Length: 337
Ligand code: PEP
Ligand code: MN
Image 1: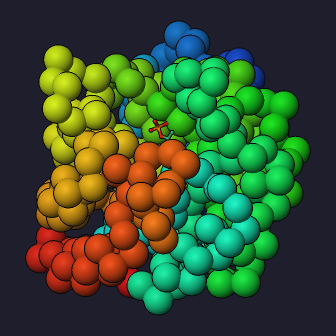
Image 2: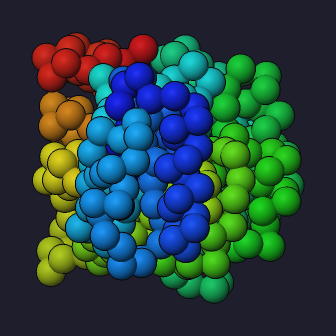
């Protein structure tokens, strides 16, 4: 339930609503928007809505019928915008993230970052803990990898995003990483979602391999219920019968999620297609569909990449793509810096 306050409601009236909700057993969370303040009633408790409508300063009471409450579009009057190192995701902004699949060495990261900085990349990606299908495949450099990406990013004035796989890694991620990624395989790792809900760093929540929109938004709700509102959803393709591409990129998720939620939605065309030559057209399509950002795998020398070389762009390809999507974005009322 949402209690929407009048635009001229006083702090005392807002506080009174919150206390009344708490007396009924809800957790009350106040969110001050530009136009109005909303008091969110968190909890599933049967109450008579009219009791709240009559409180002084209250404009209206909205019953949220979806299973996700904080992530629901009605929960706030505007789109959530997440800002990282000057790059914005959401509303009219399309943010870009690029970098290799995995951190291999200082030189590999530095060479890639150098090239990417020439294409105005401000957020670099790179996995240090890799969720590999085979236990015999390269598992990532671990903490050593995070140290490398942090140091390279600092040298190039970039922010860092990397995938966290387990709650036990939280301490080191807090130290080295600016944006935590929850991978497709961990979208329903509820303990991990609860823990990242308690931190004050943005989280990229990838869509599970066969997750419905509702399941995905419920996972976002786990993070938000803990108090962390900086959630960026990431469409990375889903499992279908088609084997030609690595996954099937569900571009319809962009308008659907935008209708259901105020959270930004970005697209990962690299894991969605698995093929370098499909990454460029699908990135253009995602921007044209109004996505709030892209996360793209780029390696300074994809032929020797330890992981996902076939889907990694050459830096020159990324640069060309950047120039193209910068032109496409304004057509759909968006901006790429
Ligand atoms: C990744 O981004 O490195 C990754 C493993 O992606 P996903 O979780 O989408 O498979
Ligand atoms: Mn990868």
